[in-house]
Image (cartoon, rainbow, N blue to C red; front, side):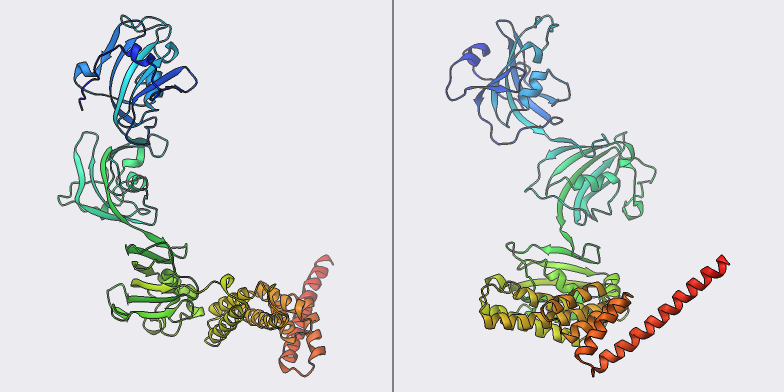
Amino acid sequence: MAVSPPLPSQSLEAEFEAQNSESPLLQIGNDGLTKRVIRKGLTWQTPFFGDEVEVNFRGQVENGASLESSYDKGSTFRFKLGQCEVIKGWDEGVGSMKKGERAIFKMPPNLAYGEVGSPPLVPPNATLIFEIELLSWNTIRDLNGDGGIIKKILKEGDGWATPKDADEVLVKYEAMLESGMLVSNSDQGVEFNVSEGYLCPAMSVAVKTMRKSEVAELALKFSYGIIQNSDRIKEPDGFLRPDFKITTIKLELVSWKIVTDVTGNKKILKKIKKSGEGFDRPNEGSHVKVIYSCKQKDGTIIQKKGSEEEPFEFTIQEGQVPEGLERAIMTMKKAEQALVTISADYFSDNNSQGEGEDTPNNNNNSNNKALYYEVELVDFVKEKPFWKMDNQEKLEACEKKKHDGNLMFKAENFRRASMEYEKAVKCIEFDHSFSEDEKSHANTLRLSCNLNNAACKLKLGDYTEASRLCTKVLEKDPLNVKALYRRCQAYLKTSDLEKAEVDIKRALIIDPNNRDIKVEYKELKLKQKEYNKYESNIFGTMFSRMS
């Protein structure tokens, strides 16, 4: 890229020393380098050490001879910044410049050729003056810090986002051996999951640093160029061999699909087909409108709901759609379209909790196979947060959620029921603005929800949490028989027999005719008898061995 030189109306030294309020002298670093900007740059970015820069320049020795000039040669000069390919003053000076900037630098001997000089033009201890124009640069990065993958950006990408491990990328590439032989390419593009990789280890490392439409050249060493997953790479002539070691890849990131790991364990994955609008997403209690279809792996449609004319409407966390799908929808934005994959493992883990009555898992997926959903979130209205509610709205919301929890409990969906009871309690958590009547009502609701939640925790096997919830109730109502009874059940499950006996005896004193308490007391006595027998056997064995 040849550029016409500035008019030689005065020497570099005179131009540098000229007083100019629009281009004051700047101090670069702490080693005496000074700079006067003649023309400002076009961007805010500056090159980094390691980048390959392209410049035009002319120079002279202070009070001395003119030096080499790219203008005289008719070609630009390229070098790698910070790699000792030029004098230190150039590395520091060019590193301070922006694209398109033209500046004059005064470089003291310690940043130039020092005490030795560079005969015949540069004498010892000479100060040099250079005018430099930064035309462009290619960003070069050592991606792993070990020299194994050196990335040179040939074309900057769009935006700022880069793919993540779970995403699926579409790339075009050309892969070559050290000899320059082309061994693999994909003009039409190839799609792969970043975490699984493709062709060689360098591909997945590099794409995570690239922006959309970016083109880069990768120089590979060590094991980064070794062929992997060769069975997945389609070469029409069968030329690619596993023993090949790739040294250069020209790589273009065409696009990618964002994949969200909804559960954090890859059991529910959401791949975005069409990005949504804005930043908001549905929350618990939101009223949503969706269109979705559910397929098995062979493409068989087993459920379809909603249409463009009449989307399917439901309320989040009311058990109207499969829980796995609902969790994915809560990560979506308005007008977003996505593919949701729910693995067989997810159904196995959640089978005992139920997925709602009208779900593919219950109706057509008895073998717990993976399911594939195509979903569009047409619109949604978020539930009003409790901190924006007035007192009456808080009490009404608490009652509604408690009612929803009761329905879930009757349907034996204990996990969802527990969640509803917890949300109900949150609605009335802060009651400092309540009247005395409202506080009394809220306290009754709170006790009831905590007791019901304790029953859920017992069903779910979370005995520690069940006893904690019962304790909260007993702190407010020490004579609450249900709380004593359920805490006793929890203690029995954790073999805390002494505490269980205290609770059951207190319950019997309060309600001596309660049949359930009597049955629980008998179970306690039976467990105590079994434990005493166990202890006797242990001690008997010990003493017999001692004898």
